[in-house]
Amino acid sequence: MAGITINNVHINHGEYKLKGRVYRASGDDPKPSAIICHGYPGDTKNMDLAEELALNGYNVLVFYYMGAWGSEGTYRFRNLTPSAKSALDWLVEQPYIDPKRVALISHSMGAVPLTNLMSEDKRVKTGVLMSPASDLSLWMAEGVVDTIFEGFTSMSVGKLAMEDLDEYKADMIAAGTNLNPMDKVDFITAPLMVIVGSKDDITTPKDCKALYEKATSDKEWVLTEGADHSYTEHRLPLQKSVLDWLNRKL
Image (cartoon, rainbow, N blue to C red):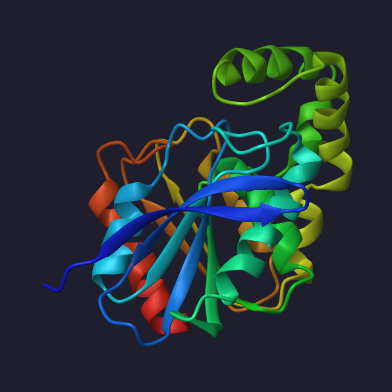
């Protein structure tokens, strides 16, 4: 099998720089490509997925949102979609990219930038929602907000630049109203695949199915039997499902 090349890159995002890594398929001719939007706080990198896609002829950009994992600036939920847009703007300008064949792939909280960006930006030709955070309005239920915020902040230490925690909490709550994937998905016209593990207890099959059912575009539902939220022991089935979808839709 032909080799791939892997390069670290910096993406312009206003006055800031976002960190990223490009997995390039063999050959210099423009190729179909994908951008991976990581979840919260980004522990699951999906580098193996990026590598597998590159080995099968796709260029892949893995990037980190503003304030995440060494990208400059402060992490806020309102910055996720603008960060993804900057990644898309950067990628389509690269000579090895076919700008008419670009996909977005998200994991978990990455559903926020994917659904928000794809609901407005027609440059994205297909999307893959892996274990998507589906209905953020559930964060605002009585007795839930404080627990979620405490969990988010503890998970983020050393990974996200949170800064003012009171403002961070307000931003998180606002995301439940303004950035909710459940309110954006039916504005997407490009094909979508939703994939979730049957044993996912974070973004449950029930919640993911509700997001899938709200989508109105060409779509496909994939339930990976036995998989947890990170597909810990089901990475190969995950890779196969994503690759099969891109081969058909991109």
